[in-house]
Length: 283
Image 1 (spheres, rainbow, N blue to C red):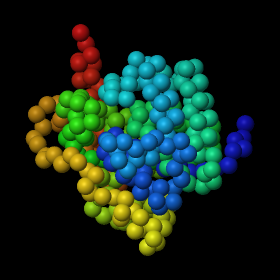
Image 2: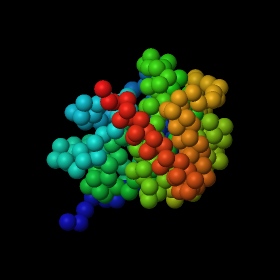
Image 3: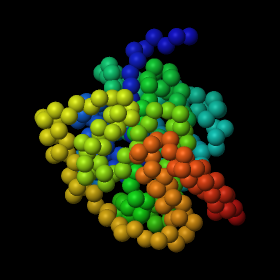
């Protein structure tokens, strides 16, 4: 049956404690519509999260139904995405998406970090809502991600690096073949004009950088909001070594989203992570 809903494009911001709010806020200032039901700002993100509160809560419900939560680094069983429960959740997400973006007629931005592990579910949502997803990843040094999580939640460095791995490996694989762009958080803060011009070219969206708009982005992107500045250290465990490998791959992806060396590094990291995850989970 043909979808009769008006077609729209959504820039899906992918990342976790890596500057996703900064990127989403920038995209909104450059003309991408935000959801109506915005999560409120707090001490951890004083300028706002730029993500839909209702979708975040439903993502938490989905993860809880699987015995998981937002910080869990364990994989979601691939077969679950083909289950009846997944179909029902996709229907609920589609209804929320349409409600949150009902005023959008062209381009919008969707950021919700739990999507990193739930992207296969969202493929059905985008199809049901006649939405074309354009993926924009933002990456940050893994030790800084771990430090950010420790400052906010008190999690260990090991937990933070495992979280980094899961939330990079899963969505990178899920978006192969799709239109996507990659950004480094430090580069966004240092030269947002150059970065967003590159993103626009990669995604086929000619962002307007008029003086008034550019001034708003300049005011929004304050370097002082990046709190964790961690010096690079030599890997001292398998998970820190793989996190650095993934970070290097994501750096290569900024120039070519299908860089063969980066893809090979991601494939290797995924295999190592899967093997080590089984060892950790074993009694």
